[in-house]
Amino acid sequence: MPVSLDTVDAESLLLAALIVAAALLYSSVGHGGASGYLAAMALFGVAPAVMKPTALALNVLVSLIATVRFYRAGAFSWNLFLPLILASVPMAYLGGILTLPAEYYRPLVGVVLIYAAWRFFVTAGNADYALVQPSRPVLLGSGAALGLLSGLTGVGGGIFLSPLLLYLRWAPLKTISGTSAAFILANSLAGLAGVMSKGASLPPALPLWAAAAVVGGVVGAEYGSRRLGNAMIQKLLAVVLVIAGLKMVLT
Image 1 (tube, rainbow, N blue to C red):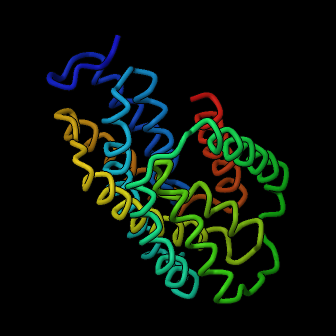
Image 2 (image 1 turned 180 degrees about the vertical axis):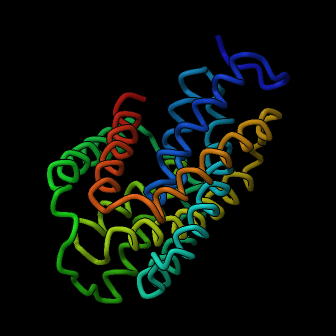
C-alpha cells in the first residue's frame, strides 16, 4: 500500500526508520544516501514525482552533516574539490532539468557500481596506497560528467565520485569521503534547484523524514570521520555501492 503523504501513519514511520538506517550507513563513508532513500521510497510506493526532489532534499541535509564532520577531522582536499565542483554544479542543474529514458543508462551504471563494490571489498586489506596527482583538465572533465549523471539520476554523485577517486588513487580514503560529502552537497543543491524549477513539490511528510535523516547522518558521520579505519570504510563503501547498484538495475 502506498505511503500516505498527508498523515503520519505507521508506514510513514517505518519509512523514516529505513531513512535513519540509510543515512547512518551512507554518511559513514561521506555520502548523502540518496540512492538508499530512493530505494526505500520505491518500496513503499511513494509517487515517482515526489521521490526525486525528496531524495535530493534529504541528501542536502545528510551531506552537509558529513561535510562538516569530515572537514573538522582534516579529511578534505580543496585541490580536488574546487575543480570538480566548478565543472559539476552547472551540469547537475542541467541534469535536474532533463529527463532521459532510464532503461538505457541505469542498468549499465548499476552493473558498474556492483563491480566496483566487489573490487573494493576484496582489496579492503590494502586500503593504504601510493597517491597519484591528477591533472586539472582531467578533474574538470570528471566533475562535468559526474555532475550531469548526478542530476539525471537524482543522487548527489558521491556513489560515482568515490569509486573514481579510489580507483585512480587521487587521495587517501578518508579524504575521499570528506571531499565526496562536499561534492554531494553542492550537486544535490544544484540538482534540487533544477527539479524545483520544473514545478516539483516536496511532500508534507518531509519534516519527519528529514529528522530521521539528520539522526542517522550525525551518528554515521561521527563514526566514519573519527572512529573507523580505512579498511572498514572501504568495506562499508562496498555495501553502499551494492545497494545503489541494485537499485539502478532493478528499478
